[in-house]
Image 1 (tube, helix red, strand yellow):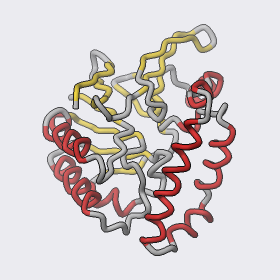
Image 2 (spheres, helix red, strand yellow; image 1 turned 60 degrees about the vertical axis):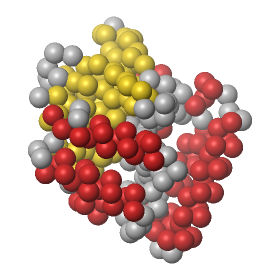
Image 3 (cartoon, one colour; image 1 turned 120 degrees about the vertical axis):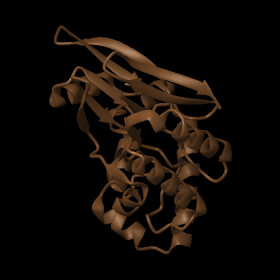
Image 4 (cartoon, one colour; image 1 turned 90 degrees about the horizontal axis):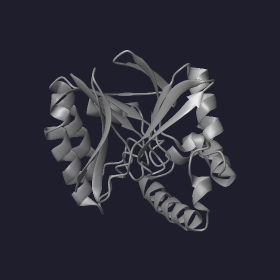
Length: 240
């Protein structure tokens, strides 16, 4: 049996073609997988598990069907959907993962992370991340009415797009020293992450030992996944 990894679908009502492509993926590739790992930014924004948007219910129902059919589903928070909680996970038949999760991937310890915490050169974003990941900030936001939270999510999306357009490309990528630090802390030689929208397979050394970092792509013109079984770990894509 195989394991599949995806991230950065940015599901949103304004992108129905991505939702259709994701459901097709569930009905085909994922249907024969032992496990599906969704490594953050699954939704373009998440304002709380009480959000009654039809898309959220439809996605949860499709995931639950897959889970009921025997595929284990794991969800990780991204920088767009960090408010996703246990209620949605239960509806989807999924398990929420910690920010840094190490799994045994067919005999190879592998560190899973969304990837935004590795972008330490972007000090402005890291400061913002610390704010919105605090329990107090999240409690205050979730206490607001849905309409207010929807407006805030739209404002944050626009602010993020405006800020990113002014930043140098290199500071929005991961910091290699931070990558090595995280991998050493987890005692692994393989990392899988998303976030940067720069799909690639990177090889490097950690204290003289070969290591690798596999980066998932965002779903836009292509769908991206990592396919892993006992024989190979492969970054794959297909047109949407």
